[in-house]
Amino acid sequence: MTYTSEDFNQFCHEAAGQFLQTVVVIDNEAVFCDEPCDFFGQTDIPTSAIKERSYGVLGGQIVSAQEKTELSETPPSELAVNGRDDDKPPEEFSKNILMAKPLINAFADKGVVCSIIRPDLEDAEVVQRSITVASIADIVVVDWALGKKPGETEGQKAKEIIKGIIEGDLKKRGRLRLISIYTAENVPSGIIDDLFKHIKDMFEKVDPISKDSENFTIQNRFLKITVLLKTAAGDNIPNIKPVDFDALPEKLHELFAGLNNGLLPSVTLRAIAAIREGTHHLLTVLHKDLDSALVGHRCLLPYPEDAEEFCEDLVAGEIRSILALAKIGTKYVGKEQNELWVASRLDSDGFLNYGEFKAASEQISTLLSAEDTRQGSFIAGVKSEWAGRNKIQGRKAPTLDKNFIPQFLHGEEVGGVKSNHEFARLTSFKRESFGLRKPPKGWVPKLTLGTVLQRVADGKVFLCLQPRCESVRLDNAEKRIFPFLELGKGEQKECLIVNTVGSDHAPVEKKLFFEPKPKNQAIFEFTSTSGHAITANNENNFYIFEADEAPAQRGRQTTAISRFYWLGDLKDPYAQNIVGKMSDAVGSVGINPYEWQRRLGK
Image (cartoon, rainbow, N blue to C red; front, side, top):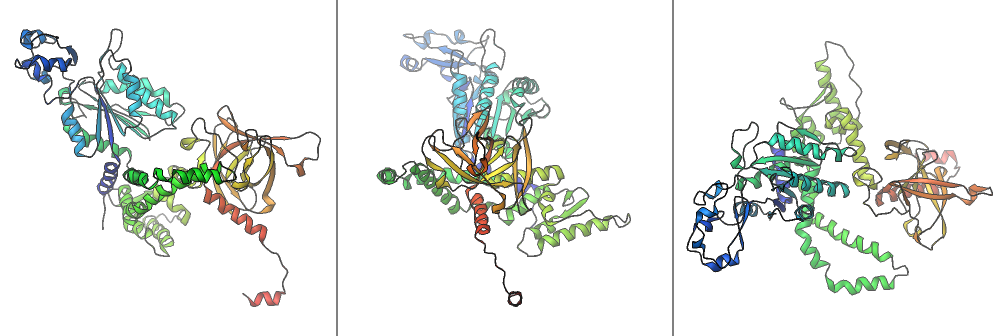
């Protein structure tokens, strides 16, 4: 079957639809009745109705009802705003009005819960309240004109809210974020310029943001802020069309899907959606009647602290079961979905390009199959196609090998290498000292199996081989020896991509080859300063471990201290695999057999 880029876009769109659950809208002129302020034009509403509702929204202003007064005593002309009478259509009172009911209903039809915050000028907590609710919302919609007090500028509250949301996201190590400024102010380019100046400095040390004044967006890899116009803004601004209230949910859905337009993001969205859907079932499985067993487990353990990680593993195992039962991998990252992704990368002639090389979709489809010779056939086909186009020049084709394939699929060398390295770290490390997976504030590394350290003095990198059970249950001030494998030493048997600390304290990515054999081991002795485990100290945002040289290495009166940067922790199976190879090397038996007999076995 032949796929197109539109098929892949639809795949991503459906993933976003499965994920989206919550939207928060912040608009000071939101109206919750069918037609805004319609009771102001009536004369047969009893006084009791006015007492129950002590205010109304009129042209974006709060209008207090007059207590103990019949509505008929207040002529409609006295309720005029800006010289307009209330007998005119409600929409005429304020161009920036937001009709809440059709918006909420439209979101509800898509299975999304829409929360609307309507602040007023005297609401001192609106900025913090908006930031708080935005932290748990999938999409945030903010009106640009939220009202202003004397001395304030237009859009000031909106800018404060957006900046506060971004600050919160950055403190949480970053998150995917879509913010829409939904307004009737017909100056979208001015809004984008003003907001960009307000927030650009926040991204100096992280992923930089860019401004697209023609499409009225601010964006980096994980954040997108876009201006959408209400219908009252008119249809005379180039490159932007007004969006009606009931069409806003689909527009936001489209924008969110575009922000996640990728195979891995789409699979991740579906995985999170499956966990969300299974949340309440999970709560029925892990129910309160099991509490006595959980507490009893801690009581029976010789080391009660072991119950804490036990509980984490229990919950994590049930979550993994949810993903397995939902068949996330089978359904959403199978051969068909991979072919969809490839289709999105093809040029108009149906080729995937990498420098001088080209590959047709049929070649890549074969590469995605289970044929034993598919990798070699792909490389041969690419070289043959290149040779056909360069026959006259008589040039020799550049070297290609099977390991080149992921880079080829990326489409260009620099990005392909970067993608390979980042994916390698993602699949081997569970947390790192740099980047998006840097631990949150307050978390402290503990030395255990899989911990990767860099010696400050000479930059050498070591992998901790100490079993987890021997890394804990330490008394305060207790000393313990830890074995390490030096990375970057020995033959090129294994490889680990690591972000190390450079001379200027910036991350330096290194490809460290190593050989898991006893001859490449190192021994260091650490002292527990907090009890239970060896923990690091936070020094200028770097985690530092301090060790004595092992007793066998000292031979001196003064104790030498080695300081180490914490670089990260390997995933448990990855670290255990290295230990297994080390164990095999230790347990290997070297014999000198009768050569004639040994050759008979070949």
